[in-house]
Each structure stands twice: as C-alpha cells, then as structure tokens.
Amino acid sequence: MALDPRLDDVADISDLSGADLALVVELQRKELDRLLRENAQLHARVNQLIGLQEREQVLRQQMQSMMGAPKAEAPTALLEDNSELAVRAQASEARYERLKGALALLITAIERQNTASDAVSPDAETPS
Image 1: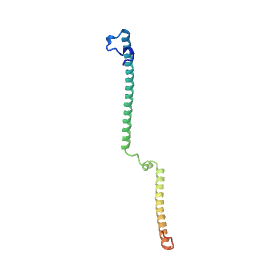
Image 2: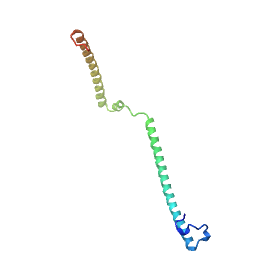
Image 3: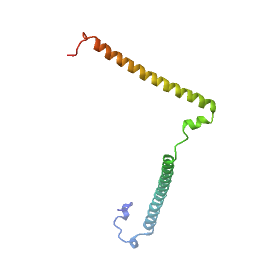
Image 4: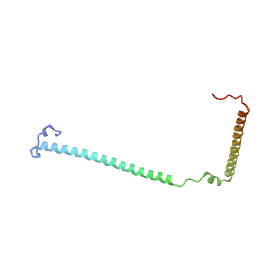
C-alpha cells in the first residue's frame, strides 16, 4: 500500500504521470534517508557494545591476574623494616600468649572447683 492513495492502483511505473513519478521518487528518497539514519544508529550502538565487551574482557583479565598473583607481603615482613614496631609487635604477641595460657589455667581451675563442689554437696537438687 502506497502512502499516497493515488498510487494504490498503479501496477507499473510507466503508468505514472510526471507529478506522480516525482512523488514516488521523493517518498523513496525519504524512506532511504530514514533507513540510512537507522543504519547509522545501529552501527553506533554495535560499536558501543563492542567497546563495552572489550572493556569487560580487560577487567576480567585484570581480576584474574589479581586473584592469581602472589599474596602481598605478610604484616610481619613489613614490620621487620621498622625495628621499633617489630619489637612492640613481638611483645604484644608474647603477652597475648601468656594471657591465653593464664585463661586456660583459670578455666581449668573453675571447672575443677565446680566438679569438687558438686561431689561434696549431696543436697544439690537433681534434675527431674
């Protein structure tokens, strides 16, 4: 179906008058212009998508290389560079170990005290 009702019944271009032929050419030119604009927009979108896909690949490769890279220096290795901090860190670690041992002894003593008091007091309520 043509855009101009006068052109609906025209089966051959030779049947068109000069004005009708000019109208057909103008309509075809407008349609061609529209198609060319759409084509340019599609190409721009495709180029944008290709750019995004390339960026994604680069980021993925960077992430994989970061995950596969050796771990950063251990904090103790960094502390060795600064002797004062290294001494303080070692003192803190030693204090932590002493406190951990003392806590373990305290827990053991409390458990023994609780078991001894349970054995001495037969009047303790029994669960029913």
